[in-house]
Image (tube, rainbow, N blue to C red):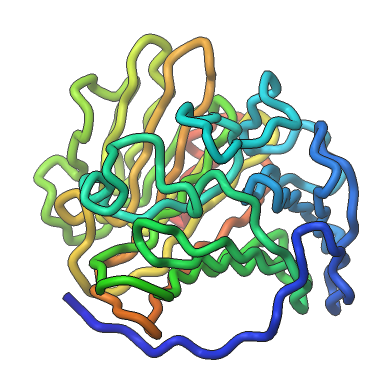
Length: 326
């Protein structure tokens, strides 16, 4: 496995309850209450808005400015709830988060397969201001000895959010791990993937769960599917671009690409669709696995671009967003 760069010293970070002390050029950051969480942060650049809730360590919403509905899925039944130190049940809150890949190694590092490692998923994160957004910093996870740092920023002029996720090795033995970002999104009209021109998967994808995807089609390098209403479905690909197509807008998610050994047999991106009654899908990006020791870190950047729908045909609109018609 690859050994990556040494950890750089960072400034002292204020507590989760302390507001950011500055605003960046082209983006504003303000405190507000979000569905029962009093410590939410709204980042806006006039084109798009992102909602960050440090108490649950998530980006809970991404939307065009003025769009109340947004694009990310949020579990309204769990509004305002927090994980507790003794909680053994996973709270499926929604939003965007990160876990350590591969999931098959969780038992080795934390003594259980589920729920996810606490510092990655369920503990409050500290927050401080960046030039165009906020930075979230987790406690050190006991099992992995890793601290998660997520830099959430909006482009100064474009309808784009970037999340740079760092895994910083603080304690314990070296671990082999990859950055895994999971974005839960509302029930789509379709989900699309821009397949690479050269790929190892014979069908263009690998099936990661038993049930087959609903409405799956591949045409002109674009794989598309819909949420299966009765079955849990998951597929993986070597693609680096995913597209969520809603009724009024689309979200293109671009993963940072590069060489290396990727989890799940070489998957760079994955799509999971959840059955009724929780109507959501997950668009996931994965980084290559690397072995890191104390003082070292790995990082991965994911880009999210919100685009308005302009064509009645969702697949034609998707080809436009993925630049397949150029």
